[in-house]
Image (cartoon, rainbow, N blue to C red; front, side):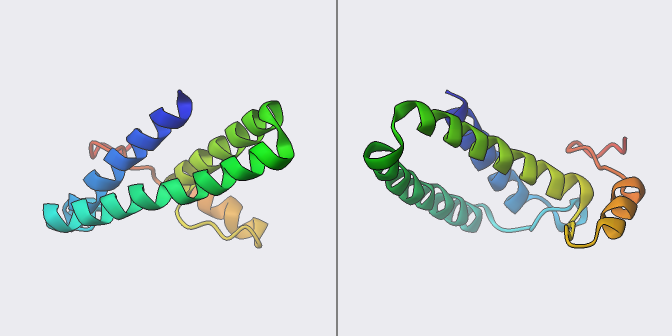
Length: 114
């Protein structure tokens, strides 16, 4: 259930980001082009799922696969949030990370600064 939630949520966010005005942080694409990019993204999502299913069936088993998949999905969504929240963070420089976290002003999706 959570996988479906994340899948459709991120697809919608991607489309809105692609058609959003450049002045507001979007890419400013036409709806047709944004739909093509989003459709390609959604289609390519299925390839790793197919390969992961084969690995799960042959090597890991049902229970391990559930926990590993949930952990990977959570890490991916957290990484997506962190990239948006803190900008492009270089993890190799902890001092740079610390400065970036405390100096970044977060912009709410609806345009209000928090």
